[in-house]
Length: 279
Image (cartoon, rainbow, N blue to C red; front, side):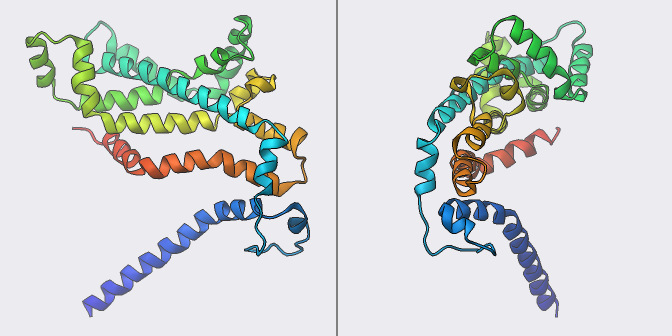
């Protein structure tokens, strides 16, 4: 009897998980399916079809020829890599200072720093816009990148990980004459690598999907990111009615992030779990 109940519970769990997975994945399936339909076939469907007998890649060719999608992807790649690299440098050094260095008013400064998390990012957009404009950095990569190189949340997450490393390791390293920077790069960073990988991936996703700031600070198509370029594609490239071609553009933009998550999903889960455990 108990074995039967166990089997029924396990079956119910698998059924629920399967249904949930289907609900989550269906929008992606529909996006890919629509991108493989021709413009005429899509408009001829009075009732949306869940499959197509005549798939075509014409939409994918069109998004690269009708609009400079490759240039948008390159701009986004440059923006993402440079921003993430600078963010990691700032985050690692700040987290190390708050977790290991001793200086007057550290707790007060850190508390004030955390208070910044309570301020919605939209409130500082106007200030950043005015500052970047006065520095004549609009329509430039520095103007895109600089406001995004610091993150209070990532500094806090990494600081909590650094704080879990026993103080004895630090004192032993200092006795051996190890400098703070050498201790940081030789001991702390290797120990907290899962969290660093998680922070890196989350920042990459954040940069890739960034829209509000790039939309405000760029009006030159030479500096458009894919998030801004997709609107340009819709308005001036493929047209509002060409839904299959628009879906093809979205698929091209989404694939890098999907692959990134699938490859590093275990590292993401491990890093988040480490960040949430104290002691």
